[in-house]
Amino acid sequence: MTDNTTKTNTADDAEAAGKGAKAVPSRRSILGWGGAGLALGAAAAGGTAVALRTGSDAQPAASGGDAVPFHGAHQAGISTPVQDRLHFASFDVTTTDRAALVKLLQEWTEAARRMTAGHEVGDGAISDNGELPPDDTGEALGLKPSRLTLTFGVGPTLFEKDGKDRFGLKSRRPQALIDLPAFKGDNLDAARSGGDLCVQACADDPQVAVHAIRNLARIGMGRVAIRWSQLGFGKTSSTTPDAQTPRNMMGFKDGTRNIAGTETDRLDKHVWVSEKDGPAWMTGGSYLVARRIRMHIETWDRTSLAEQEDVFGRDKAEGAPTGKQREHDEPLLKAMKPDAHVRLAHPDSNNGVTILRRGYSFTDGTDGLGRLDAGLFFIAYQRDVRDGFVPLQKNLAHHDALNEYIQHVGSAVFAVPPGVRDKGDWWGKALFA
Ligand code: HEM
Image (cartoon, rainbow, N blue to C red; front, side, top):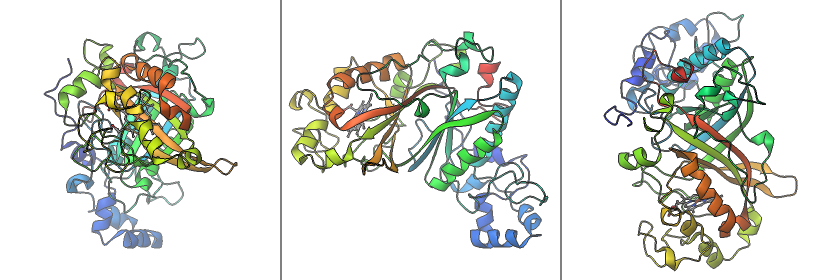
């Protein structure tokens, strides 16, 4: 079984990220020198970069509690509190060299360790050598760690693509990492689907999330290329039930009945891969399903309030289940329409199937026909997609009243390994062992 006694993401991890690291200014420590404006201004003036770099990094950027510890039994960004913003990136591996891929994952891990603690990548954005491009792209200078989490996963095509065992990993592919079946109503765009690797960057500041993905992509140049990426805002789920439940683009509270980050029993039962599930390299990990779900916003906006509430089986103002008063009242499924989303998605209608949702809203401009290209970037974590997303989505795809107003246009599935334990560990180490 998963080691429940191991603390998830220990508090001194962020500190570890600073220790032994080069003396570069942290985002926070730059502020400590008199604010971002001053720091950037001074750096731009030239010659002061060294002064900024020395004496600035004795304390980890995370000391104020703004950083989510990177090390732990599980990766951060799954059961840890949901941040406001998302930048999700899917990568194709372009190198055929296993050693080059391993080296990239080691470099990525070090960069992730530093960025989540609020530090710059490598020698930072303002280096001594003006002749070279800096290691860090710089747009997060002066910004707080913003609870940045970077969650790493591997897709089915890393193990086998076009019948080819690309990196000698084919025999290590988890049985649970299936290719998702086609679901009724899917209209998937291949250019927005799949991927060999993924990184989910979540932060309270969008610039911090974008900076993280940009720097990982930059480090990966020549070895990986971004296949697709998705920006998200307005988290549509909560792993902290005490907090106010966020609303999705349809105006409804979303995430009311999610698994909370504190519910260790439910997390062990439904989210974390256990030792007996296998393979061993996935123990403490999870499986991620991402779906880009477009909403027909304009149609929805012309739909009566009563119909909207019937579609979900909850009222719009309070979020209470049909026939109940308060948001967190136990849903009475029989009181809802047979095709109501909540009735169909509820564990009681699916032999107990339960997933952890962690999605975000998106609006990517308009589609050229005057309609918003907006919707839900759905992210779900589960112990096994065959007992999680797949049966649930089969049920929803056939019966959900919501289908009139949505369409699934992108899809991906990834195995998310357990957490990085310490400085000697790296993303995927056990997989490549
Ligand atoms: C654009 C698409 C979707 C929208 C707008 C949406 C919206 C909502 C809303 C408003 C709720 C009620 C509040 C809550 O408990 O969170 C809900 C519940 C839920 N949804 Fe969705 N959802 C969408 C897609 C999906 C998909 C694709 C799945 C899974 C395959 C799913 C699974 C669930 C589950 C499991 C619940 C909780 C049911 C319960 O235990 O009461 N949803 N959704």
